[in-house]
Each structure stands twice: as C-alpha cells, then as structure tokens.
Image (cartoon, rainbow, N blue to C red; front, side):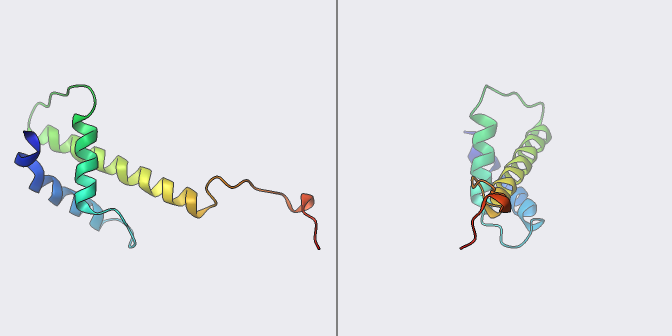
Length: 93
C-alpha cells in the first residue's frame, strides 16, 4: 500500500541520483526505484519515524545500488573472473 503513495517522489529522487552518474549508465530511474523499494520493504519489518526518514533510507538504498552496479561493471571491464597469467609462463610461437 505504501508504493503508490510515494512512487512519484521516489522516481524524482532516482532521476536526480542518475543525473549525477557518468554517461552510459544503463540503469533507469524506474528500475532503480523498484530495486530500492524491494530492499526497503523486502527484509525485516522497518519502522520509519517520518516521511523524511523513509526518503533518507530510500536515497541510501539507491546510492548503494548504484555503487554495486558500478563495481560490477568495473570488474567486468577489467576481466571479471579471468585469471592473470604472467608473461614468464607464456610461450611465444
């Protein structure tokens, strides 16, 4: 019941967060809102002191999602699960 009441404000918050990201970000505001919302309400029951407290928690969840996404992309860009091999152990043909 909470999501319809705060959805537009969360979407604006997500759009603001994404506007500060580097170009080429593949995550969209809608997806960021949904992921943050799932993190907020998907775990143990939460109680927020106020509307502001809820939005602070949502902003923090969005920030963490963006950081995790950036780390994941960076690891893929740098080889992901590939293993480094020293030049000494390679044969030149």
